[in-house]
Image 1 (cartoon, rainbow, N blue to C red):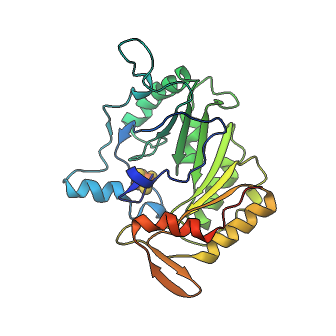
Image 2 (image 1 turned 45 degrees about the vertical axis):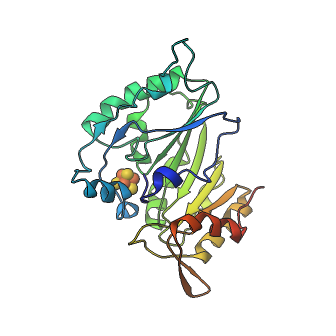
Image 3 (image 1 turned 180 degrees about the vertical axis):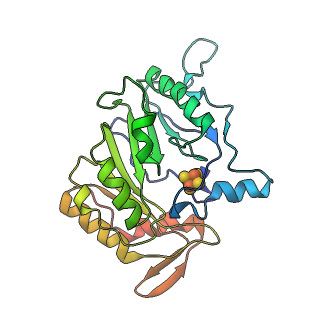
Length: 264
Ligand code: SF4
């Protein structure tokens, strides 16, 4: 999902957490490799990182940590205790259309089901694949799963959010990162979405984003009484007509200083 070379460090900073307090959180990277899908993928950090090692990012491989949530100590206790929060797939997409991922996903659902005592956060650009990817016993949605649908511009929002809002999912979040255009999501904010998160693009070739786009999203969320998080500015941020080039470690700090997060 990420487009940021520091995503392993920063990707999930500021993301909403399920209501229960999680005593431990971890990134659970089930498979590595992905296919570019939409405009937000242009500067995907997975491709840039893999290129440094001569690795083909389109080759999707199951990782060694696939069973991580089930790992136990010698005394039988789970290494990740009850209440832990797992963020999935930081170098791929959970709903990726791939022969391997489509097969491994069923085992992943079994792990998620077995660890009902933990929470799982899935972020995807491929929400349109949701119906063909869920397990038979999904019902109204596993209570321990939050799904974040990512939309980077109005085109993708218009395609994905009308579909997403009606899906049987216990916890829904909108992710707008990298934000590439102004967005009108007001028609989809009254559908039980628990939070909206937005941020700019990072990396050497980052595309610009404008402060007024975030202000607009914030206003829409306020009108709908939906929490809003301005997660980070991105590397090339325009405010009052002036372009600011912001180093990666300061992007979260600058967003926080803007003080436009909203809690109803
Ligand atoms: S979906 Fe995410 S991981 Fe896959 S290519 Fe796009 S940005 Fe990269």
